[in-house]
Picture (cartoon, rainbow, N blue to C red):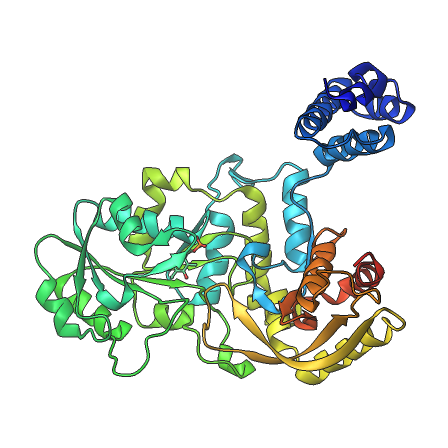
Length: 470
Ligand SMILES: *Cc1c(COP(=O)(O)O)cnc(C)c1O
């Protein structure tokens, strides 16, 4: 028998170590015992494969880190230094202070969620944001559910189940994360009728497809890509006119649903909710956590008659918005009403930052990182809006570029890409985690997406990670 097995400590011996006893007392003995068994089992396997038995100290260390990882929350704050503002993998929009406070308040206490305080009887959760939606978009009515995918599903299920939904071929798109228009259509029970061609669809294409089974005319914003060149798409006003002529409702899925004009910030024009409402769409669907800058939600605004039907559909209950999101969405919409959205909503504040401001901030970071084993400079770069909005558009920015010095002994495998990859890994595993961009052996940090109050933490984490082991 392999002599290494004899060095393997017993479960009892590990459990009697003082640090392990302490851990069991702080948390739960059975969870710690489970961690000890798992670690010893893995060590046993490795010995079977020819490894030496690790020192007792190392085994105890593995048990402690395994056990403590169970008590570390899986969902943690991250500093987004990528320069992608609405970063889908990093939780999309961070919320305004007021929205966060409103969400906390709604979560920590009872509320009049479904209670009419004037009348002292049952109320509706839909009332809390409807007036705000009406005032900010100009629509007759509004209603919010769990996310925009649910809003589109609910709208199609209500207006076009067992009927046909007419859509331009160029708009039969995949938005990402499994949201494909034809699949959502199938789930809703509507039959997709594609008209026109990928690059050109005329109003006459829609008109010739209209028949007794037509349920809706659908327009989908091609959020995350552009068709350029020899193209034609039918305007929403033309679709609305056609819809009126044949008494067919028009649904517009805007995706991002900007309430501010992006051209104010040197960007291209992202379609605005107010424009779709003014064009007369019966239902306009958009997300709460893209350019609106609020909590995850799917919002439908439009004609009262259609919106009331959506509220009554059985699916509406299944996809309803929870109380904290209702509170956060309300507080976010209030910023637009008070005309302080650019100053208060983080995504707009990030979009609005000037290059001079970003340059000053990157230089301030630079001055705080002196004396580290790295070549640190401020360079020109580009940020993006993200979240499937304005795909070809970039915002000029300034980046902090960190090129770690290669270890002096030039150990095998210490390539610039390897060293910078290891640094990016240390930043991701830090607390708080920092997610950066890596480009050809350089680590890039974009101040545009870092919240101002995160600056000190970021500098501390970067200092530690850059001076850490290569
Ligand atoms: C993002 C997007 C959706 C999905 O919205 P979620 O809020 O992520 O569910 C639907 N349609 C379009 C056009 C989009 O851009």
